[in-house]
Amino acid sequence: MSSILASLEVDLGERSYPIHIGQGLLDEGGLFRPFVDSGQVMIVSNEVVAPLYLERLERALEGLRVASVVLPDGEEFKNLETLNLVFDALLENRFDRGCTLVALGGGVVGDMTGFAAATYQRGVDFIQVPTTLLSQVDSSVGGKTGVNHPLGKNMIGAFHQPKAVIIDIDTLSTLPDRELSAGLAEVIKYGLIEDEAFFGWLEGKMAALRRREPAALAHAIERSCADKAAVVAEDEREAGKRALLNLGHTFGHAIETGMGYGEWLHGEAVGAGMCMAARLSRRLGWMSPEEVARVERLVDAAGLPTRPPALGADRFEALMAVDKKVQGGQLRLVLLRGIGKAVVTADFSRRALRELLQEEVGGEAGS
Image (cartoon, rainbow, N blue to C red; front, side, top):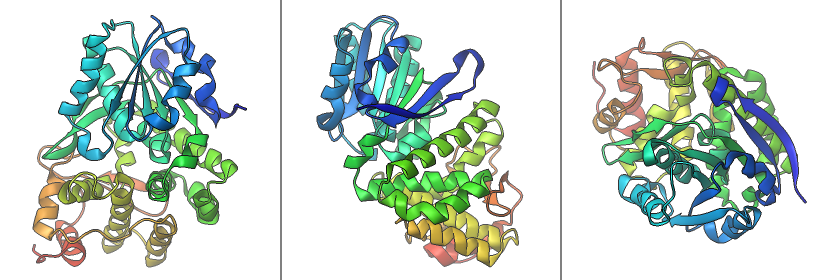
């Protein structure tokens, strides 16, 4: 039995698109067909998700010309070499520029499918069908697509908005606990950025979310998507406010790159990164100890690390320097002036940052 529990829209004028959240939506071919112009559909999935859900989606799209490509699973495969598997499948099936790609999987599948759609024959349509909590609340919404480079995460990509995002929360029933916790990092992020009331709701509902109670999950996903949609509608290409969505990510990307892609899950790195941002904000006098403790408690309650690995201060700083928020050689960070009050700034003490890194990841403090 399928049901739509919530729907909302990302308002981008002619490129606006719906987000449908519900149960059993993978079986609802009618949700997909309005966004398939030529009848050609290429489903992109991975070797973990495909055995679980690919046949169901293929049945829902019966009557269309459907092909699929199954990618290896993991952040370490989010690269140009793996991307070529998608192009190979499109060309072997002689799909034209009227085709539609469907991303069936988590954030890696979504990012890579979107980038393939942005570049195949100079741009084709795609639909996001995220199957992890992290992708449902974050990466499937907003049109950021891309792949990693050995020297930096998500440094090769394009902005390319989907035609629709279809979120079936039933897919979370097969998600490992560690992956669920990783998704909760991005949910917490929205409360910290500019939704203090949502942060408070999460403090009371974290246990229910980890138990996968459908009502709690649906609300958390809807609120997260609504918060992100509002930011994206205001700043689609990250010229200003959208950079707030990277709270914890500069620290987190340094962890992911430094440890080797896949060693820490993205959400785990973001969880530790948000705590680092809060502790740096405290050093700057922008947050109280009590507020920092609330952040750390909620991140910990989500089953996430609150401290980074010992990569060494020099190496960590070098990794942070390879970041999309660096402008004119100057590092900008998303920091907090309180819960629900995030800011993007280059106006922070480099000594305070250095001392934080020395204390938390090892190395000597400097000026």
